[in-house]
Length: 140
Image (cartoon, rainbow, N blue to C red; front, top):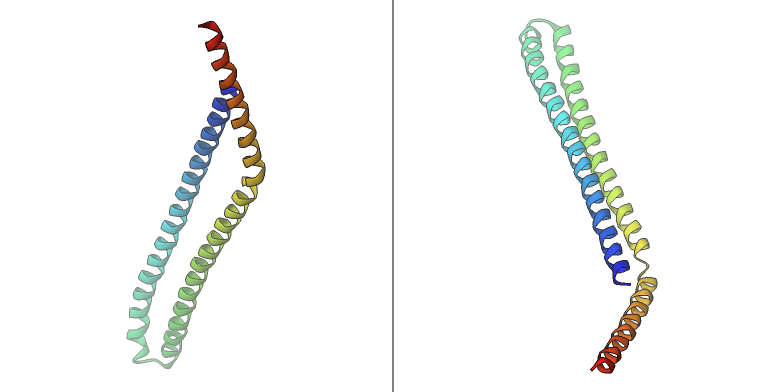
């Protein structure tokens, strides 16, 4: 019976190790995506700065360049909003995943079933201990 307990504990430890590995994979993926978002955001800002400077110079002289400058500013603002939306969506999806994981963990707990099993195991261990104590007394 004790070997069954040991085996069960080892199964639980194995499951925890697998879960840690999966969590680490997800963390690495998240960091990679965040790094890519940061790189693209930086690239967008640098590109905007260069383009802004070039068009702004010409906008002083040419009406069509002034319109292009306004469109550029609008495009830049829309891109920033898009990046913010992507980041917010990522946060929401992560929160959803976390909540789903919590729900799954709670549903797997089966507290009542586990309590009954533990109580039965405890009773069995007490019975075994009593039997061993009787054998020990009889041997003396």
